[in-house]
Length: 274
Image 1 (cartoon, rainbow, N blue to C red):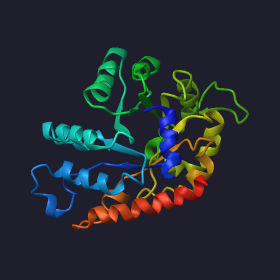
Image 2 (image 1 turned 45 degrees about the horizontal axis):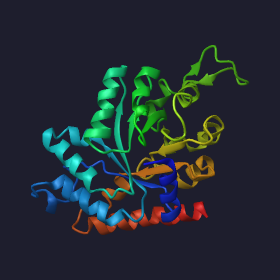
Image 3 (image 1 turned 90 degrees about the vertical axis):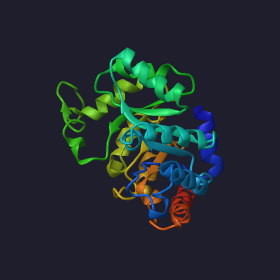
């Protein structure tokens, strides 16, 4: 999917919601547990219930990989079922030396038709560049994440980086450096919703790039703050909600309840976009 197509979807649906299909076989409703393809059936009903309210779906690949071959099959079936006007993200956090990254990219961009993959930048340019060499595909690079451990490395001050406040955070160096490796047409960044007040400063570094923002919902992130500090002229946001939507109910009405929560997000987003 191109940037233009993504922006058009946001404008048409008045939404920048990304639904996280982080499907845990142990958490899906009991009445589906005996289904021969339980994970896909669960995903299918969530997609049917939410596709008009969101612009993207994100599959955390760990939940599928943990199931072995059946998990990979469920992931592939899910990707194939998602409508093509949706932006589909493989939350795989890959990143390795060049030839290995190329194989990762082929796995998710060619063998499975994902639009984007999350990428860890720790190994540097030659580990990220291979993901940027596929037409109309995106690398979503980890920037400032929402987990408590982000302070261990991401929020360390970088020695020797002269700024007005005596240094810059490592994540700021990452944003500056990585943004030069691609363009706003093929490169996004992950910024956690629990770091919403940092978004204003982040936007001075990368004003035009799209941001994938997890952490709204169960992790306590504020959609209002994310929208206030992170939105740019093209919206520039994909706000992900996973558990808050897909596990809204443990009963047979789970898809209806998921839709109700997604609708709440979409309604709030429409107000911020107006």
